[in-house]
Length: 244
Image (cartoon, rainbow, N blue to C red; front, side):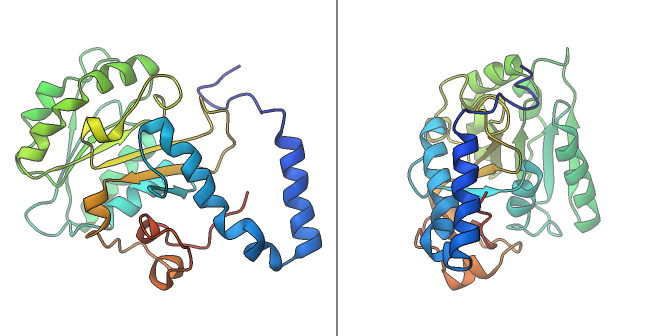
């Protein structure tokens, strides 16, 4: 089993896929009102305890790169607070995304790693002179463990007004994780690896006080019209929810 790429399919998938197909075939457009609207909220609430979040605090997206786009759209990268610090171990898609933000004014700095496993948070701290973001992503479980053990150093970036993004893709479901005690501003991940979920479901946690004031430019009718009843994460649920 290559859980790093796609976990084993749960036995109940066949039955759940049939329920989904039957709802579409038999209920048509009524399926939205009879459960599909709430499905993404319910899945988010099941993920939340795995990272120490609460009900209504998780929004779902198609992939982690899109969660970065949502986060990035909350900030103006044309001003002086436009520095993004990330480490060499970032997943390639994340590096591609943030390097492309330079066209919008971002200054991107990549911190090298000593052995392609460890993340030198002290080295990162020296780069965080009033950056806008502080990104810490993992590509392996060993790196995930090290990063989470030292993630409390997020207080360093916070002292200069930076935001901390924690990528918990490889950690969720394998080691204890509490985004509140870690003090991170954002946490992202997905279900297709150790959670044995399918592709196309990534999650985004935003710290409560930030949810109250951030206004992502990557938005849509769900966020504006308040179609979903969960107000806490509504602003980052921008689009028609996917029901599969």
